[in-house]
Length: 176
Image 1 (cartoon, one colour):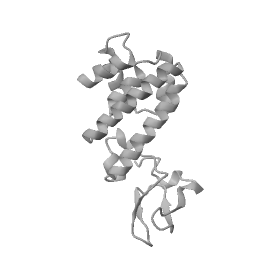
Image 2: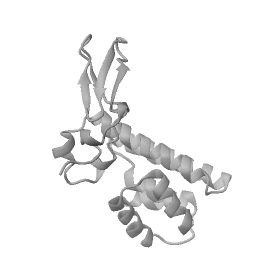
Image 3: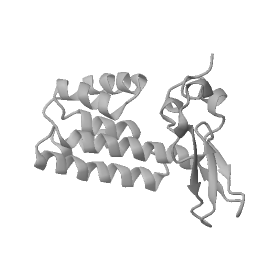
Image 4: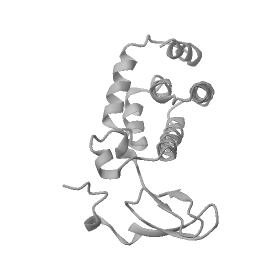
C-alpha cells in the first residue's frame, strides 16, 4: 500500500506546479511527491517548497517512501513546527508569560544552534509546561504534533516539579 499523500490516484490539479529557481529565476516544474529537483537552467538543487515532510519525522517507512531527506528540508520542517507552535500557544497564555517563554525559547534555540543541534523536546516542554490541559489538546491538533512526540512530552512533563517560572524551567531543562 502506498501512502495516500504520495499516491497519484489521490492528487488534484495542484499536484503539479512550477516554482521560480531562487538562483536564476527559471521556472522549475515540481510534482507533489518530488523531494527535490535540479533547475534545468543553472543546475542548482531545489527543495520542493510545497511538500509536507511531517510524516517523515515519525513514520517508520519514511525513508522507503521519500528517500533520504535533505538536511535543509529537515531544518525547514523543524522551523515550520516551531512557528506553528508559537503562533498557536500565544492564544492561550497571558501576554507577559508568553513573552517570558518566547525569550527563553530563543535562548534554547541559540544554545542548540551553537552546539549544532536542535532544541527539540526542550522547546516543546518549555511551551507545554505552562498550558492548561484543554489548551494542550487544542495546540497539539492545531500544530499537528506527531503522536510519538506527544507521548514523550507527556512523560517528561510528569517528571517536572509544579510551579516553576519560565526562568526556573529553562534552568531545569538545561541541567538535563
